[in-house]
Length: 128
Image 1: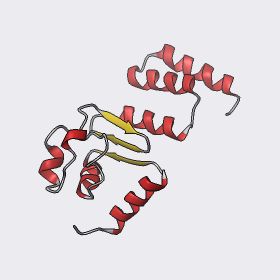
Image 2: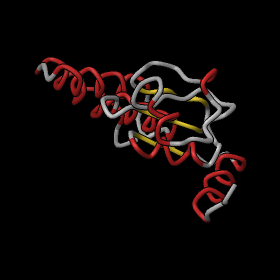
Image 3: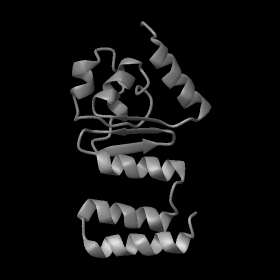
Image 4: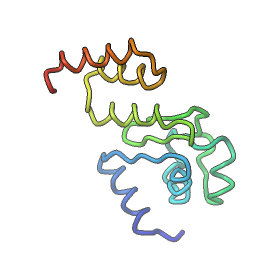
């Protein structure tokens, strides 16, 4: 298999514990690099990765959900962007758990009460 600079870097990043995130068509690149063959992941539906990456062998690790986080690998379908962002923010430790939950509730529903709950968690974080 041809190993591009990107495939080598993605593999090294995963091995070193760095977070690698892929959404939609970018999951096909990881499948083509054989980086999804032994880890839970998702993409644009069962069969998509086989169609676009003939060397893909990770069918038994495929999870049919909008977004899947497996330690430092976070993958999402084209419709999983919000959950994918939540999992990335969580992995990076950007917000405390209560703030992340309020953030997700607001952006997944658009309800004003969740916006105010989010603002309350931010003011109680004191900028942390």
